Amino acid sequence: WRARDGVCLSRARARGVVHALCAFQPVPGAPTLLCAGGQDATVKVVSFRELLARGRAAAEGAPPFPLADAAARTLQGHAGHVQVLCACGSRWLCSAGADGGLFLWTMAALASDTPPSDGATLATPAAPDPPAAALAHVLRAHAATVLCAAWDEARRVLLSGAADGTLRAFA
Image 1 (cartoon, one colour):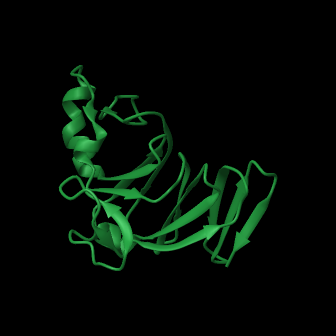
Image 2: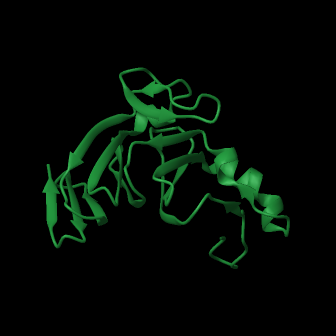
């Protein structure tokens, strides 16, 4: 949406419910990326420019385009829906959800056209499950769905809260 006049700029359709959105610039000078996490236990990574270009016709009345068609990357690894997305400075993207885990993805790898290889799972539309260096850490911190996460840049601390009644802090 364009805030000043309420005009819809793009419309896309996801598979299932979208629980979380996060926009960030992975490295200085790189295009802004939009991440969408949801019911299918994945995080779709889309160039904001691509989202606007593909969705312009849909915003003007055509049916919404499938978000998966525009996704440059599909991050996989969660065992349940993705409830939370949070940019952690310029280093990581945090995804969390029903499995109680917080996954930290390396932003620089998300911006790369060719994912490097180290065994983490990163899928792209062209190649369903190639390994990549995007997944840096998995924090198994909660016994229930992670409901929120926040990054404190000044202290360089990741905070998370979950349905199990716990709040965790990671430095």
